[in-house]
Each structure stands twice: as structure tokens, then as C-alpha cells.
Amino acid sequence: MRIFDAGGWSDTWFAGHGAVCQWSVGPGATVRAGEDTAQRQKISQVRLQVLDFDDDYSFALDAPPGRHPLLEAAVRRWAPRAVPLHVTLSCSVPPGSSLGTSASVAVALIAALQAVAGKAMAPAELARAAHAVETVDLGRQSGVQDQVAAAFGGANLIAVDPYPDFDVTRLEVPRDLAEALAARAITIYLGSHDSSAVHRQVIEGTADLEPLLVPVREAATRAAAALTAGDLAAYAEALRDSTEAQAALHPDLVGATARQVIELASRFGAPGWKVNGAGGGGGTVSIIGPEDPRELRLALAGIPGVVVLDLAPAATGAIVSDQS
Image (cartoon, rainbow, N blue to C red; front, side, top):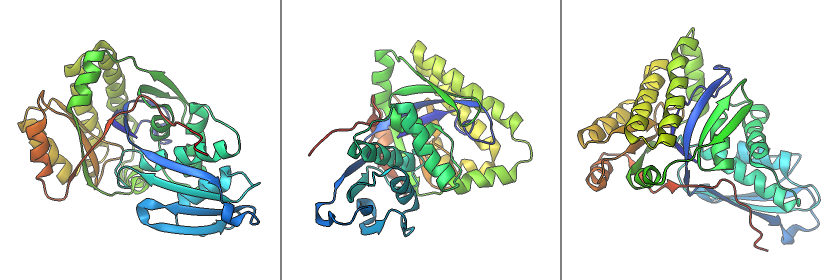
């Protein structure tokens, strides 16, 4: 998954082109896939266990029931037809966290299904495949950055031009800054939200988005330059500016609880923060805490209804292993 997505919103179809600087974190999604030995005679049959929802059901590939549309769409498009399958999924953070959870699950699922078929995808191909499931198969609103984070991992600058085409530049972050961010980053879960619905809210609520997207794109390039230069202060400033540029797209994108979190972090001396992903009600805020973030963590955990997530930088994206 990803945090600190400076430039988010400029990777969408209505932006047309853009840039996002992001920091990949984990743990993310885990998928186990293999032959369902209990149903060897039922070709094109899938047993799907969604552990986070305590759901376990089977269906034919040509007749998915719609209980988990994203998962079923990915399975229908990418599952090998030669064997019945047993697929188990879980994710380390709650759904609707605005960290790219659905993309993380989709990328892991497609990678696992391709491995069962004896195939493998390069990270860019895997990201594009997962993005197509969300936008083409399901018709949802989605930028491209979430799938890139899940497939590539690491710190990246993503150039989008034109949407949905992208190029990924891996950012070489000096060790001192990388270690400081790993120690000081705090991500606060505010509750579940529907990213696609938030996208529709912005699209329908603003007549001309282009002038508002200029500072969004600029924040991404500034954040990437600061990371590679090892400049924590400049990076924190770019994240703050990206959050305010996001709020300018629609005032509801930085909600009341997010503002409460930001104000508290500021009082404790935090230099930077970013409302992750689409923002809106729920979602998450990631903060660069002060040099000793322990007191801030305790204070944030005391806000009613929020959860401090346990995340760490993830240098790699999708990893496939054979555990047969």
C-alpha cells in the first residue's frame, strides 16, 4: 500500500496527466491460490475465502454472484480455466483506509492466479492489469498510483501522461532520511470510506478542475526532489502543500477528524502530513512526527474513533512464492 502520496488526484482520467510521489508501506495483502483438491471434477469452479469478512463461498467463473465484485472480477479475468481453484485472501489494514487497499488485494490476487497458471507479470503489467479490473470491468473511479505502489514497492515518482499510461521512477532516498521517515511516520485510520464515491463528488462539484490541479502536480515533483536530496523539511512542506491543494479541489476532501489529527500533530511539532488517497470522510492521515514521536502517538490514539496503524516502509512490491 502507500502513504504520503503527494500529487494524488492528478493520476485520474479527469486530470488527464499528472505526477504522484509516493512511499510504499506494508504489510499489505496476502493471497494463497492453488488447486482445490476437494473439487477436482469441477473445472472453472472457484472457492473464495475472504478472511477479513469471514466469507467463504464457491462459484463458477462464468457466473460470479457479486458478493465481492472486485475479487470476482479479477478471478474471472485472470484465473486459469484448467483446474478448480481455492483462493484465500486477507489484508493487514481495514478496507476503505485510503491506502490503496483494493489495489493491493487486486495486484496480489492477479499475481497469485498467474503463478498458478505458470506465468508471471512484470510490475508495470501487473499494475495495469489490476487497474483495468477496477476501471474497465467494474467501472469504478480510480487513479493509477495505488496499483503502482502494490506492484513496485519502494519510493516512486509516477509520471502519468496521458492517463492511464504511466512511467515509474524509483527514488533513491539517502539512508539518513529513509531511516528518519521510517521511525517518525505515523498513519492514523479515521474510518472506512468509498474512494470511487469521493471521486464522483469532486468531478460533479467543480466546473473547471485544471487550475486547481496545477499545485497538486507541483507538490509531487517538489516532494520527489526533496526525497532524493535528503531534505526532510522540504519534503514535509511539499506534503503539507499537497494536502491543502487537495482540499482546494473540494472542501470535504479534508474532513473534520482529519483536521483534528493535523492540528494535534502540529501542536506536537510534526513538520508534515498528508491526507492519503482520495480523502473525504474516513480514510487515513499520515504524519511525519517529531524526532521523538512517542508522545504524539499516544495523543493521537486518544482521539475517539481513530486507530494508529502499524505500518513500515516496503522496499518491494508483489512477491510470489511457491509453498506447495
